Image 1 (cartoon, rainbow, N blue to C red):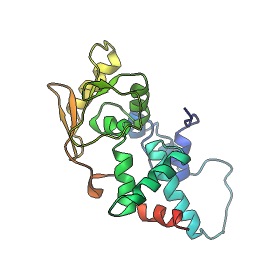
Image 2 (cartoon, rainbow, N blue to C red):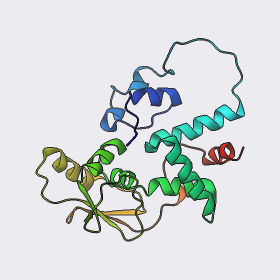
Image 3 (spheres, rainbow, N blue to C red):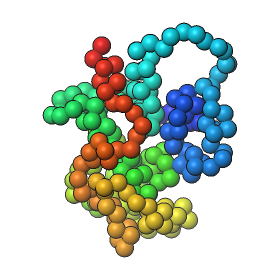
Length: 207
């Protein structure tokens, strides 16, 4: 499966904002954008005017990088969002939020989406009692997400403690007693705290 394998801090520096791709490190003084808040590569002074296309492209790249989705898959999500009723940009973000790796991250069962994705691929998660090893699996209302029993790992214990202290978004609920997260509704735009202007992505793909 294709995935991004290079330095993630470069992505935050390129977009000029924290994308929180490395979990706890992003909240510390080791964060790449805190140490060097400039785009990667050779620095030159440029007086070129930033075009409308460039602004739209940067917004699309930002969303892709936040959710860890490659271009072909992202285009597929956009086409699916277009076919749904409602506002295309909001539909797109709602689809991305419903990915299992993002849901696990939102529940606190992963310090970052990348860590949640790795745990899912290794078979650590179940949805409604059945093992799911596909990070792009879309959860539905009523689905129950949890880490499989029997993993006697210090990191898994840390994540369960993290989830117990975490406050998930309003569309999710987490029960520390059973270590189970539940999808209680589909996310609305005001419940999706990603710093993006999704309408610019719609305009980019409408060219």
